[in-house]
Image 1 (tube, rainbow, N blue to C red):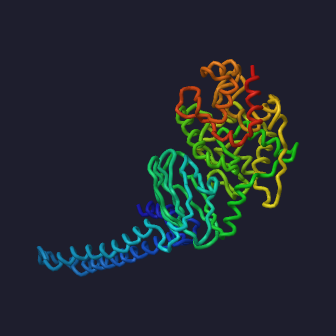
Image 2 (image 1 turned 180 degrees about the horizontal axis):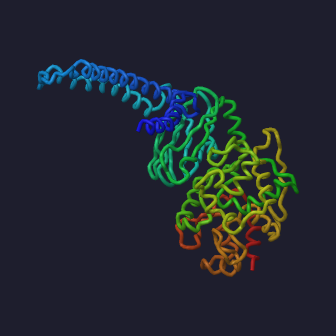
Image 3 (image 1 turned 90 degrees about the vertical axis):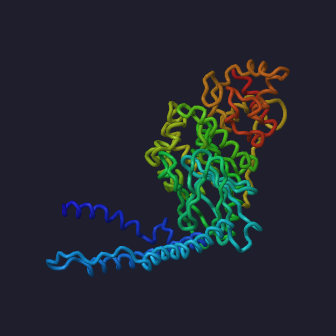
Length: 484
């Protein structure tokens, strides 16, 4: 029996001792902000009181055991005491006093933190960020800045941040141990918290509420930087990436991405209209997924705009480099078990990429970073776009480059949206008094105007009216109506 106990202790001891590491990047004792500092201080205060109570009680217990233990061969029972009013009053009042000592500062801290910082920065000058929990990743939106990113939260140091907590699916919990404690993200119910970093650095956050199969790998990073660095990051997120060199692997990868990845991922929210529409786009993707979770080829997925600026990907668990990104595309489950990408994406369900296409896609994704602030991105006018007769040839190129081919086939089969074979015949008779040309054009600019299949909301992004000029839309319409 003793050997078994010793063996069990030897097995459990490392696990128990590992929980006592103070300099872990998730240790709430290594605080980097006033919220976490207050929470740490109240914990230490309560812990000290608990230790004192433990010592006093155990000392009294040991004293009683040793003082009044049976001695020698004595068989006579000791004097029986059936009550002591003073003692009973004492040990009834003592817990009340102790709990009051604990409760008062705890409640004051909770109310103070619920109100936000008391230095006037909230509500006078709040930095507001919307944090959205998805299974299993985090989305971050900067209202008023037209900036969207995923799994990497940028904040300036020494400035309070009002984080609005949202969930699109199940209950999550937002936790940055070194900056602030846990607060739940509840579907259909808004929640909020405030955070503030007191030093620059990168801090690890994660979901702290079990939310499904990949919960343990639902993480994110918080990048706390100077006000100047934060503003430079914001400005960069609003600039376009450099166009890939014609004929390069990145240029080919751009086509691969448009044809296979844009169903679920947005990579152009540097365009203000796209950034503003991203919330609606993600909700539409989520609704399309929920309509048929087993067979859907669409799901709300992380925004990949300027992905190359990030240090990690796959919900913060893998370092961003070409080797890891290639491994992720080949088999996401090798890096993150339980992910939705491997179950829903078309490239894992009959439309697999070749090795060359994977390399091209990696090259393109690793090129996604903003052009320099003083750079001028040369814009080439597409053939037939912007004036003159619509060009079906240019529309065919737009069909591939804007991601239409990721959701629609040119045949009769349904991918995410309907196939476009014979569209001219169908479109001309769908709405009384509306021509096929007008019907298709309105469907591109306002996807929810006509929802095919009886759904309440279209999964198609409502951003093409902002992405494409009138001539390009005319070209795209001409191509779609030419498909037999």
